Image 1 (spheres, helix red, strand yellow):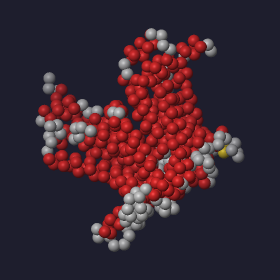
Image 2 (image 1 turned 45 degrees about the horizontal axis):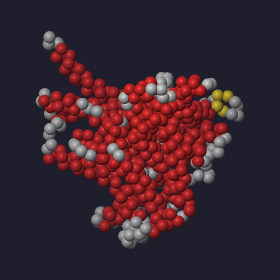
Image 3 (image 1 turned 180 degrees about the vertical axis):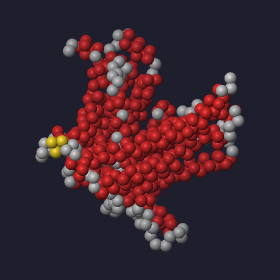
Image 4 (image 1 turned 30 degrees about the vertical axis):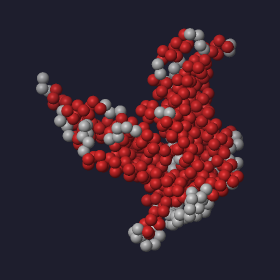
Amino acid sequence: MVGERSTFSRITAALFLSFTYLFAYIPIVILIAVSFNASGLSFSWGGFSLKWYQKLFSSSEMVGVLWSSLVIAVFSTLLSLALGFFVVVASKWWHPKWLFFLFYPSVVLPEIVIAVGLLSLFVMIGAPLGYNSIIAGHTLIGLGFVVPMIRSRFSELDPVLTEASLDLGASYFQTFMYVLLPLLAPTLLAAAFIVFTLSLDDFFIAFFCSGPSVETVSLYIYSQVRSLADPSINALSVVLFAFSALFAFLLVRTKVMDRVVSND
Amino acid sequence: MGLLQFKREFPFIGACPAILWQVFFLAVPVTILLSISFYNPDTGKLTLEYYQGLWKYPYLRSIANSCLLSFATVLCCLAIAIPTAYFIAFRIVRHKTLLLVLLMLPSWTNFIVRIYAWFFLLEKDGFLSVAARHLGLLDGQAHLLGNLFAVLIGMVYCYFPFMVIPIYSAFDGINKNLLEAAADLGASRFHILRSIVFPLALPGVFIGSALVFLSALGEFAVQEILGGSKHSYWGSVVADQFLTFRDFRSGAALTFDGVLCGIFVIACIYFFIRGLQFVFYLRRSRLFRRKSSIR
């Protein structure tokens, strides 16, 4: 284990990792390939074509669905970042014992329980289901990720900086905004990417809490999968994957993920 | 409240929105679910009738199906994730983060898209079917879809990245000096694996298993798309109760039935892992006791 690098163990490692990554990527690669196939969902290559993307972006229904999902994702991200940042940073001065236990269940509970609970809540108080209900749910899930991330990074910060800022006369608010926010910015960025992706990808909360008026990408594809014929769904899937890939690329480039992974 | 007091109490005020959010959107809904499942509005009394109404074979079967499927998913994910995490933690020198991000990337795609990708791959005239035909492995069409195999593949595909990260963290957190010391003291590779690496990774294994199990328990989209709704699963029955039959009370009762079963299984896993740890440390503590008798 230490110091040994036999060829056998090298080959085993390489083989197994290749198998794992192949398993992870083959479906997506094929999805992407077929989305550029002129002959649509069949496997005979009909030539490279962008027509499914044209069809996707000219269909007002699909563009509307994509837009809804993006709007929900943006609002959920902003809300969960704002709420999470303030609660973590404020916890340095005010931290009752139960404070962070509030945030664990949203990750531990099965998402269906949260979705069903939210549905019951909205029905009980008579609130109409729609954008707001989905954003509420996504922010909840997002907080479950944002809070631990910011918390671990915050605990690593040198407390001298905050103390100095307060000693020099800045108010709490000024300290939060002008000292701590810039210091925590990389973590906030990583958390933003993660919550945004989570929101775009989410199915359960949207399934239960969307009203008749809102349809997210997940719901749209779910309803279309059964009556399969439309290859522009492939194009839609690839567009979503492109978003995730872009974020992942940015995360790695800005070296933000290094810190996140080593803290996890 | 004057401005000065506002400024002084700002940490409390700053923390409030998030706390209120969690209370209102997490604690309150769960309380509502709990309370409506015990209360009959017609008679105005506390009752167990909604729970009793669920004590029937179809409902219990659906919970059992979900538990079994989720457990199978956990086992398959472990089989993939433990070696993967091990190899990335100990065999890869550079680009560890890149590899991890690459592994997580498919899980950052839309959930339904992931399932749809396998649906596409496995369907009657799909890629694997056509490839198998071309390679001469099959004559007719392969019925890869609509069975448990497809559902399991879909589940594992959706959840195994979430198993890798905690296990990788556990491996990564092992003090390398321990390994070096063991090697210096003459331990074989296998011995080091068995007595140092494996026991120290067990907490990560537990966290990953618990996470995957609980998430997979509420799953119903994978089963419906890839499995053709042959069996009923807890998630889809809950969805039916809430959305089709509009029976919120039975739905809430069923939700808690499922959650209790989930907690029960997680507790079993927890005690199993504790047992494993006990076995490992027991052996070493015996050695210690024997050595300390030589004074």
